[in-house]
Amino acid sequence: MPRERRIKITVVAIVVIAAIVIYMFANPATGKFFPKCIILSITGFKCPGCGSQRFLHALLNGNIAQAAHYNAFLLAAVPLIILYLINDYTKWMPKWVDAVLKHPATIAVLIVSMLAWWILRNIYNW
Image 1 (cartoon, rainbow, N blue to C red):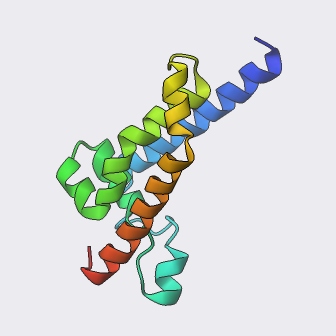
Image 2 (cartoon, rainbow, N blue to C red):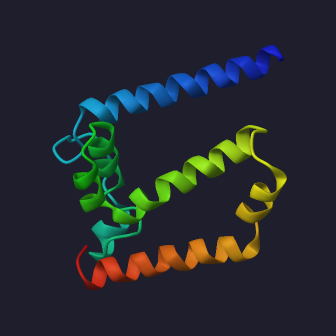
């Protein structure tokens, strides 16, 4: 593996580990230095990602019910996100998995699901 690639992987790993440690021990609900949602601030409507920082904090602390309360869509999407990451950055997955994940119908279903979540969470105040 080339030296530059090892350095990039090391830097990314350090940033990811630092973010995990920060979100595990610092609560975004009470922390002052965590960014706030611009869409919520401007419009008063929750975006699909609203609650994701609190979700991550709860999930990293093993509180799955609280994580679902903050962002249920993201909880359902975590396994899929992991699958996409494994598929894109490793060669472990069979070719048919790659084909299904990148198929336009799969992408369309994901987009429609996200839009439905966005609308429903604002109608029912989820």
